[in-house]
Image 1 (tube, rainbow, N blue to C red):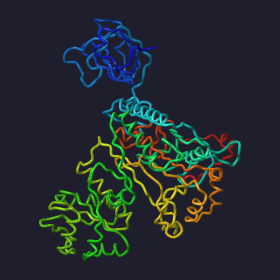
Image 2: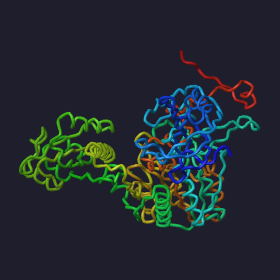
Image 3: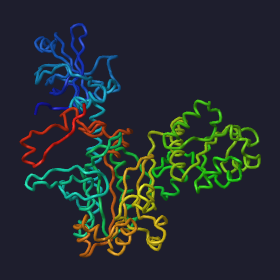
Image 4: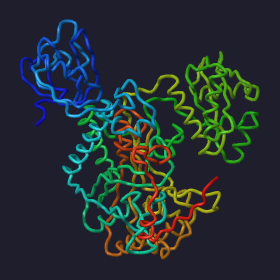
Length: 590
């Protein structure tokens, strides 16, 4: 071994021991002829001393050492001098007086600082990711990811799950996200698809009798990127036979409680809160509500319907809604601050945000107050629990637009007022999503998520007569306003599958042509089954207290789906294209 200890483990109990450390030079300081070097590995830092009065030859070699050189040092552990102790370091009470030095490799001056307090630009960090990953914070992120993976495997394996790999090269099946395609050299003109998820194969495993499957699955989707999305990502994917929703809830709650205790030593309260999709939208303006703070929305349509305000009355006449958010104590907001909230609403497609401040005796103060008789103003305040000094914010539009926009205003207020605690973890389930939604563009019903989700049994009667009333046996698990996973109880009966397909104008025969290997398998005795997939990258990021999942992935892509480090995607030689029977014919822009 080139080391007896790591750079993060030596303490006062090791004083007088002879040790050998190996690592990178974090910094070098020359104090009156005595050279101090901070030697770093992924475990921490240790101060190493080169003193000419102790060993002149070793000191001479150390005079030329630069940042990020790779060293091996042998010496004795000693106490740091009085006043030189660093309480912020685990090794801060000791140092190594060096007896021998081996320079394992020299290094050019790095293009970025290997410092947490001096992060480089995003492009520079991704171009030199192998250097960026040397930073202690990035090492911590990767370590937490590793620990989370082990905790997942430990919990699921102890609950009778089998870890089974599914194919990375499969047949293209339409629907869902856009796939990456791979030309098949041995089959000219044909393509494999890379899996956007293992959905079809994990359902086949249920038909196979593997009643509890899981996989830390690599998924690939050719989509536009954002902070919580990458073209390749990891899911904790699972499927179970002979279960209902409660079984899924129990497994996932147990898994997340185990994960947070094992990795963060935090206790997660179970069972999680449960909200129907409709309740989540009405109360929080989101199907992934952040429950770390209040500021709930309220339906005031029945109250304002009796006002003289034409905007609200027009929306209500068109079967729209009027909702209000009572921002407690925010009547002191300036016009500029209110306009900032209006800008948030407009960003989410609301034409405007009506508002009123609550004055004495439950009277409203704003340009719209004149349209509300005193008794209506009073009733509004009573309905909203409003008091003098509050700010009322109104959204009027269709159900989805009004509530989504007001929900985003709620989040902006939560941030502005400091109501959100970063070290708090609030989980919930959102259930009973609509199975279908009406497409204005296509003028027909389409699946809100996918066509293989079982409808709630009590709603089967509405499939043909009123599809909008049919709810899905679907569930999302939400953490701090972020969906970290979702799944459903699947359709396993041919008669129900045919009825669901008919609603969206697809015959069973058409579906069978697209998903024949799944639907054929169901002919041979498919058990009732359901599952869920957790977004592992997103979950680890939230556990680290960050939003950008790239911070928890070793080698991510940038926002253009490029890797500045290896230059992908790149050109391919003409010979390779011929072997793949692929011709590239792209119009180049001037």
